[in-house]
Length: 377
Image 1: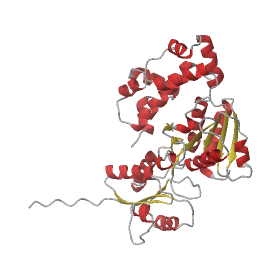
Image 2 (image 1 turned 180 degrees about the vertical axis):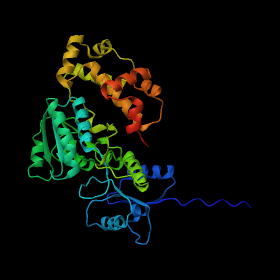
Image 3 (image 1 turned 90 degrees about the horizontal axis):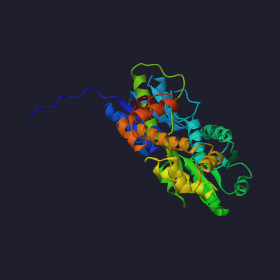
Image 4 (image 1 turned 30 degrees about the vertical axis):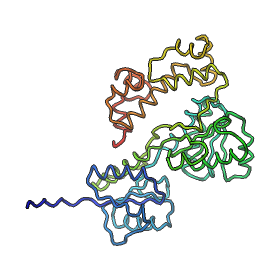
């Protein structure tokens, strides 16, 4: 009988989350599989710590310096075990990988503006909540720059219910996370304000266990938590190899917006323009001309151009380009398809056209974008 040669020792990595996110776990696990790590996820399921276990590195999310997990990690860090923290809490001294919270707010603003909303509200729990504040910091200036009427509200401040009830119809609302968005939707139901007919609501997190939990399915910014876990594992690997820790947190940009029922209504009062915008959204992967849009909207070219500028702040071509570029970025980050195939799926036909657009809008090539932001990079 042939005996297998024993494998060399595999690094043993601790994964502990004070707030469990399954997609982060998936990202860490993918890196662990690729690099033959032993990943100890026991804490994720049982909330138990083993003082006797030895680890080569730790990937954690910490939400309080006095929590049992935080104290456990601190004792290992003092003994020289490398630690990466992926919760955006600046009070911890460990190298960090965060979601790009300002970019999340910016993406939510761009999406709601693209739906035609010109009255916009950002909702957090409290002003002092760090991650929510960063998301609203990204949301507010984008809305202001577009000339929208924008304000910030906080659920735990006095008068929130009355302020929500006083908002005009066709208001777009960005909530700093999905749980806040669900609470806002339920409150809208209580005060007889219809979603999406009166308010378009978008959350953050894109967790399927939450976005389908209310009477209306929730549109949400996908923060790409899987990539966050993968990048955290990659950073830990470099630390275990002796590299210096980065001086600033690594920021993972959001992947995109998952559109659902809570933003199904376009906030565009002109029926012809609404038809044209809806046609663009449904057919941007196909060849589209301004004449096509004129036919759908039953408008002259000049009138169509003017309406786009008035209600969306852009030309029809600029909106078509934005839709195609957004789809291309999503595919570059989430798939391994060849760039030529992605160009075809986005309506740009050739890799050359996609590359030219990317260099104009992003300042880098599609390949460089994929290497910088793609899954498992």
